[in-house]
Amino acid sequence: MTLPRPAAKPRCPHFSSGPCAKRPGYSLAALETQTLGRSHRSAIGKQALARACSETHRLLGLPADWRLGIVPASDTGAMEMALWSLLGPRGVDALGWETFGLTWVKDVTQQLKLPDVRVFQAPYGELPDLAQVDCDRDVVFAWNGTTSGVCVPNGDWIADDRQGLTICDATSAAFAMPLPWHKLDVATFSWQKALGGEGAHGVIVLSPRAVARLQSYTPPWPMPKIFRMTTPDKQTGGNQLNEGIFRGETINTPSMLCVADWLDTLAWAEAMGGVPALAARSRQSLAHIEAFVAQRDWISFLARDAATRSCTSVCLKLALPDEQVKQLAKLLQDEGVAYDIGSYKDAPVGLRIWCGATVEPEDVRVLLQWLDWGRAQLGQV
Image (cartoon, rainbow, N blue to C red; front, side):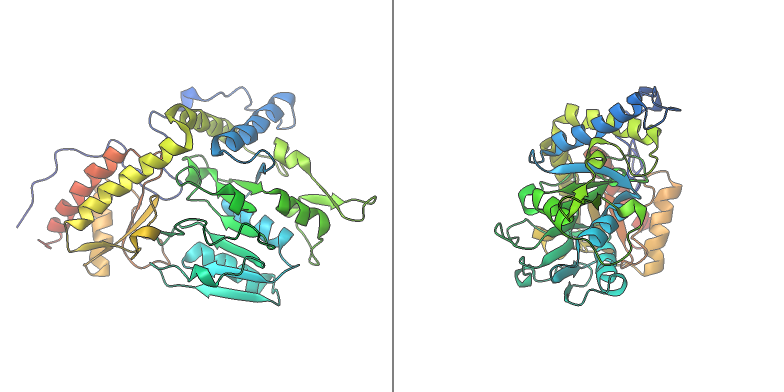
């Protein structure tokens, strides 16, 4: 049996989970490019970088005394900076249930080799038992598992009167999910996930408690330059925070083209209605997929519990041999319907559809029609 070929294609077939789709209506011609070819230390360069920090801070709705800075090496660089700079004074609870969370677990246990670490793991599709986490210890976790489509449902499990720091990889959650900033002492994300920005740049957010740790604690290991957020303070015997990082005075040379791109997408985000409107777009895309899956017995979510189901990195299992799942992804790519929707290399074979705010929910709805058609092309109807 064959199915009729769908009449329409997604207007934008970019469903990659990183780099992610550019904002609707994006054009290089819309970028403010007067900073190109100028030093990032020039007045115009500093102004653009400072605006990137302040506008990101404002649009996320961060508390006034939380600091936000632009750092090297995307979300990975931001997380490594946090781990190497802050961990050590307390025991650590490290959580991992997919590739990137497990990467931070390995950093804590195999690279930093901290003596007092409790690891909480779960297989792809599930969460560890959050009730076991002790927030009087430092806690390292990802808010959203980009490669499994499983996210923490809320911040209720994080104690308000905690003694430890919470260090959160929020890279595929920022700008798409409501984040309880008062529960997060450190949060990191990349431009390429959050709003379809360009790669190479990360963002780190610090609470006053995280800043106090930086000022009072000096790690015993060597610190690469790109991780250093403090300098020794001879007067106090502690450390002095490099406040310039949080005013756009970056540690290494940034791409001013990427900065212009980020400012453009921040302006779009505000025009759309800010984080609440962006999160609603992501949830609408997820709702299209949930309705589709509910009507078919051959496709299901990798995230078993709907309460922990991501609205950005939506991961799906198919009742097909692994090779046919890969053939389906290639078929949709060849048809110009969906690019880069195969599951992450470490994850179970399946499909991963990015549903962040820069993806049009209507494009997700149209894509789903092609899944039925593609499956039929493989002789599965």
